[in-house]
Image 1 (cartoon, rainbow over the protein chains, first blue to last red):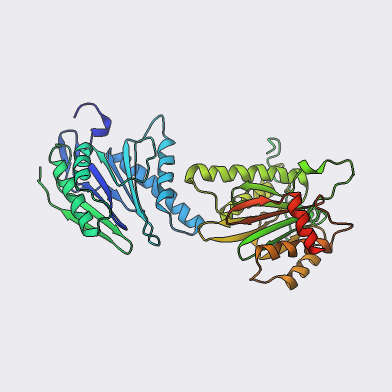
Image 2: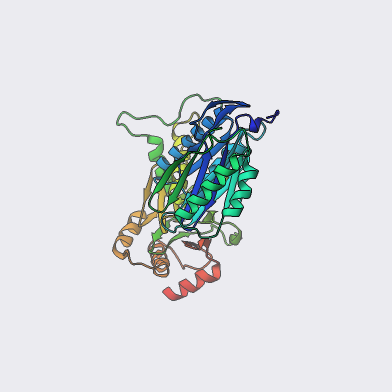
Length: 204
Length: 235
């Protein structure tokens, strides 16, 4: 594993866009360097949908702090958060710790139920913003699943095709990485529903 | 905030009133009139801007001020207090923008500005602001215009149409008769000018009134030439 703090816990996540649907998937391993401690650690938190990978404590902290801000926003403004606004809040939160950062890379996905517009954003651990992209990955196996993701991605996929593409990219990509794996959880967000599926992959 | 006073100067009277705030409202009611009207597609703010001397170079001082792209303010009362509030409102708008990358919705800005005004009725060593503000804005999420009044006490009220400052009672009575929900922005500007005319002494020209409008495109102050056109239509 080496000394890299961002690969201390391992783990990986992938987000992909379809036509009026978005999917986000993560693996389930929680480990400390080469020791696997738990195999049920999903890293996806739902606001709109928000996903953190890497350092366990910081994942909890960042998601809790973001939840604090989003709750206050919704109370004050009496309206639900838009994906873009959530993403901006998150990057603001991360940049506040520019010189003592949280050890998390973030993926944010969202869907506007009225217009069907899809959002996939990623961010490094100090809150660098990205464009609204088709495909984003974070984690120790991010390069491997990115390659597979690019292969399986087609524009304007429907929800089923999107699920297939996302899950295949993730499951096969993590086989190349010892720090990720032990199954996967895939969330597919459509206009009217969110479908969660747990996948069984190679249990190593 | 004064370091020396640890106690507020605004304290309750036996009858339960905050006398300082009552007096602040007197200062507001002695100020020059301002009118705000919410139309179906926008809001108009109008105010009297009389100068005390012919030697005044009026075109550089403004009473109607933009706060951010979609929000504008006007006041009645003490000018210097207003200036401070404009600065604070602009900063609050930009703070919001920094975190959320969105223009602050009018409702949110009003809450924050009203909180500032309330602070000055409770903090140590300060007096309440001697202004009432009319805040107009367009909310892009809800896709509709808003008009709010903020008082020295820190209370805020959403209005369809209102008048503040000198002769505000007559102004409001006039508006109650003239206002309708179907009013378009153009008609609202006319109505606002007519409302101001009710309490205006002397001849109304493009140099002694100011008009600002806020619609989907944003907030802007009308140029004297545009004001002249509206005045010509009134006759």
